[in-house]
Amino acid sequence: MATQALISPAIVVARPSWSRYAASFNGRIGLLVLILVPAEIFLARRFDLYGLLNYTVDWRIFAILLCLLWYFHSVQSPRLIDSCQLAIWGIVLISVLSILVQIAGRSPYPLADRQLGAIDARMHFQTATIIHSVARLPPLVTILDFIYYQVTWLIIAAVLVPPLCGHTVAARRFVTGIVLAGLITVILFTFVPAAGPWSTQPYLPSQQQAAVSAYLVRLKHSGPILLDSRNNGIVSFPSFHVVYAILATTALSSIRRLRTPAWILATLICISTITTGWHYGIDVLAGIILSIVTIWLARQIEPDGCPAQHSH
Image (cartoon, rainbow, N blue to C red; front, side):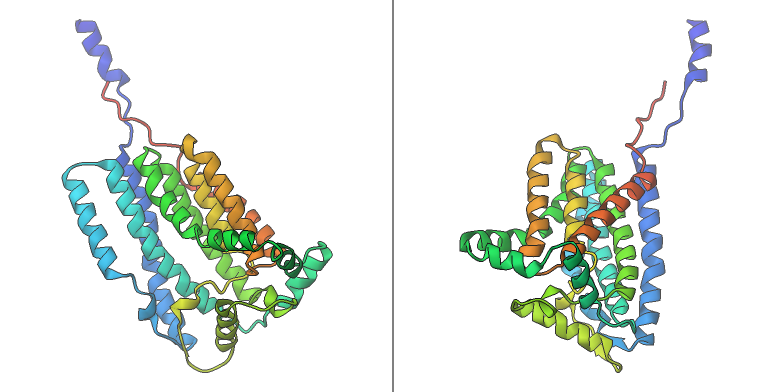
């Protein structure tokens, strides 16, 4: 017994608890937000962009989440704490990244729709052809139009569900991947801005698509511009809809029962970006490549699970 008592302390392995992993993740995201927000305020003034309050977080939802976070801490529920924290960061980051996109839209580079259309032509692909083919089946058009907007629910599920099922790292990788993909997309959008294939191909844009084109034209003009939060989806290349779908599904794939239905939905969402007329084929391809890159980067940043804490 005495010998065992002497040996036991020697085999104690100090492991970081889940709280230290959470603090590390929150610290990285918090630091990024503290850097980006002042930078965005400066750049918005520099490029005569007004109406930043249009992109502020919905404080009612934010306050509810903060109250829930306090309650979950009081009852010591790590999984609910993780879900709530990730939801808070998700809301903040969407606003921050949206503002960056609008600032990038003020770049002096002209719209590259002709160039993107030419790339599609070299790949023997045309969005208009797909739209006209699908139009022969009105029920399919309705279904794909509905599926296109389900990416929002996929995002919400990717943030909330994995932590509740004990896969918090998968959700953190999703958030990290979205941040990385968002920053890369802002750079690409700065140099390769585009409205969408409706500006170069024979089909009529929807009312929302026409509004995006008009907003991009206003952003390219000199003079003060009032930011319009209704036109967040102004990025054509790469398709961030595709990025959202793939990264969210990768997070949900950590749960075996959700893996197949999530990938089916993600595939249909990617297809719907074409059938609804929002994207060129090269936009979707670039979105897939960007997703693969950011998934790999997120895996390097976020560890493979949280080791258990052992006392002996």
